[in-house]
Amino acid sequence: MPGKFSYLHLDYQPARRRELLAVYRLEPAAGFDFVKVAQEVAAESSIGTWTHLKTLSADVFEKLAAKIYDLNEEDKLVKIAYPEALFEKGNLPQLLSSVAGNIFSMKEAAFLRLEDLEFPVDYLQAFSGPAFGLGGVRNALGVFDRPVIGSIMKPKIGLTPEENAKLAYEVFRNGVDLVKDDENLTDLEINPFVSRLEAVMAWKRKAEKETGQKKIYAFNITAPMGEMLERAELVRNNGGLCVMVDLVVAGFSALQFLRQEEPDLIIHGHRAGHGLFDRYPRQGMSMYVLAKLARLAGVDQLHTGTVVGKMEGGEEEVVKIDNFLRAEWQGLKPVFPVASGGLHPGLIPSLIEKLGPDLIINFGGGIHGHPGGSAAGAQAVRLAVEAVMEELSLEKKAEDWPVLREALDYWL
Ligand code: CAP
Ligand code: MG
Image (cartoon, rainbow, N blue to C red):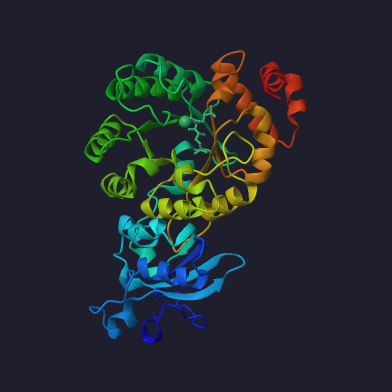
């Protein structure tokens, strides 16, 4: 692709106000040249294909072709600027078909990873972002001075609606702010959605009345889109405030539609399946990019990792994502990061030290696996969070609280 049809512009200064910038890591297949494959990536992800096209004029090329403005073979980095006109505003699936589409199947690239995307301001402003965001969720709960404490119902599947609702009540009564369905609990024979919704709402109201505290239950509405919307509407009509979506598997189309149709519901973004594309650093798309897209699409809460728990995800990565979610971003509200997976009271000090207190901390096994049962588990978690906020060690706090002592002895 020589001369005026070249995608290589190494002395080009990208126009950040009018171009979308992507950072890729590229490893060419054996026998292929890095610079050449980088150009193939720029072509295939913008307007080109494997051969020169008679149908492509120099004018159109000039206006719409991507430009590689930086390359570093040693670090495997390829930086590409895409003209804004390539992208339909407000359409995340279309964006992904370009910058995370065919290029991931090209024979010439043995490994390819999309590390980052930066968007021009007008592109960002076509999205509404979170309806509530971090601040809205804190307002809804009336919790401002500590991390929000969440619990996942466990076992994932196996509780009846009534058991599910009573268990939610039990942990709500003992210091938990937010309870959520697990990612694979939707509308199942053992726990039908509507029965669960009705039972949970009744027991949640009872917990709120008895404690004088606001509580949130995140109902998992993940399903084909029509059903998902019906379930969201049912939640709203029954007085619920929050729905959960497994956003990787449901997809951005569904998430964007839900955000548009149900602006009065908090959206809890579960990321089950993200490891399919973000786990191995040479291939796929980073969790950082997924977090940016989820914020654009309008999640209010997003799972980002724990560093100290059971899931893959190092400190540098999780801190970077959480800081991004909490920071200003062209007027799109901040998202509440959710730390979840393998957490128990003994891990809370190191978790808060690494990720900060502006966090939703979620416990499944770490509450429902407590030797004294779920109520004791909820208390132990709440005490451990309080200890951190009071700058006390867990050991010290546990001197006065046997439920915490028991949790520490059991898990540490
Ligand atoms: C945690 C959890 C969450 C994961 C999701 C589970 O349960 O309910 O779905 O944390 O991972 O099913 O594993 P435990 P991530 O507290 O019992 O581990 O937040 O990394 O997306
Ligand atoms: Mg889960």
